[in-house]
Length: 637
Image (cartoon, rainbow, N blue to C red; front, side, top):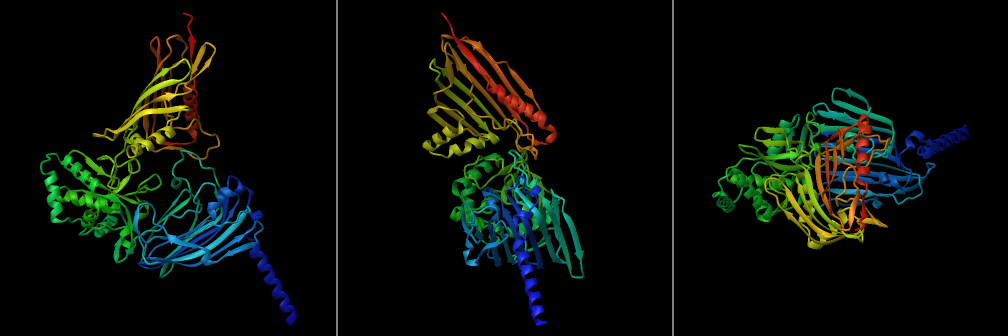
């Protein structure tokens, strides 16, 4: 009897062991999930448990099969923590294609290093990181870890898959909280299965998603936050290093931020005297603001400071004034203090910066939608916006990464959502006049005068702060011409009311035309490529998004050799579509001159699949027509 029991126990143990070893067998993945995928997430579980006002734990269990080299990054372990959190119980194993464990990673093999980011002076952010060196595809990596947190301000967005070429077999998110602490949540872009349960003491939430197929990323697609399945989570009651609050709405969030700013906008008597002497003789309020903005830019530099509450709280204005540096919080608060010192009110403004970070859901209050601070200065006639972290940006220009989105103005009575400026397609323009003199040898000399305005100013902005040699290298790389040689050039900041730069370029093209017998064939070049795509693939899954509209207006004047006549000139073209306008106009103002004018307007917007045929017609005809050749024929005189 004992022998039979021992045999049964051994068989059960062997069966359990075999099942455990084979659960990550690659052959078990459905073919539909392998299509378009570089990796397949086999199981992804994230469990939150909030235990107190300022405490919660997060447990992650993750297994991913890497199908090829392009999916390798999906197997990386990355665990972020700081002085208010700690990482426990990391476990990590690697399995071959049959689901057999080939390696168990010891905790000491996981790297642990500071994660400061660029321009960071002080930070307590750290990362535990491991990247498998296993290269026998396909293989599977399984890991789990727990983090304990001693602060509650925001929870990161949860994605079953964080990129397009990754499929998912099963993913689940759970959150448990005592009833006195509310959880706000929002489901985006996915068909989640949801359940919740409330007991006398706790409330539990659970989301699940299965069989999510991978898809190809497409250029000019909307932000991944608008496409990939996402759960947004946000606490209502928050606590961070003694600063507590209720952020059930934006007004309350503003009150909490205002608390962090208390008594941090004072300046020394010496500085107050200095800035008042600077502005006393300036009659215009706008010019006073501009003078102080220039003063701030000349005295400071940007460095990131993210120590504990310093990740949310600006350092005092007196410290910025004496040390000459600060992050976006500190520099915006310092500028606010300078304005206050001469009797001008302004508003510290919390915002999301960049394409993938913005307050996109104004009816869902969360700090997780923000990552930056700018300054808002109301005046009698208009509102001035100041980007205080860039010491070279023009006055009253906050850049495309801050434009056309919500910002949270911090006032004494709470937060107020307001929209930042929008720069339209008529304001965002590049214009150029290019004069070329064609030689019979098919070479051409040229001079080009170009103007970059508002959004397009940003394409010239880096050049303004480079050395002459760096500028030349950048121009050779950015101008889309074969055989380009640059002689003289200059880049000038001509900003007055609007950001504007002027670029002058003089040089030569070694292969501007093709000579065959007594004919010369010219494919016009405007030096600058069109920035839109030449066509849309029919199998594209995602809409096209143009976040900002713009205009190009380029004139190319060609002086031809005196012993050649124009034999063929392409017909003019004008295309109009929901996506934009494209025009080419050819003219011969004099016997030895050809003038070609190109006008392009691309409209901001999101364009779905039903519009692809119309847009494709626009794109392909624009691209084809621009490559049509002008034919010159040698005259017989």
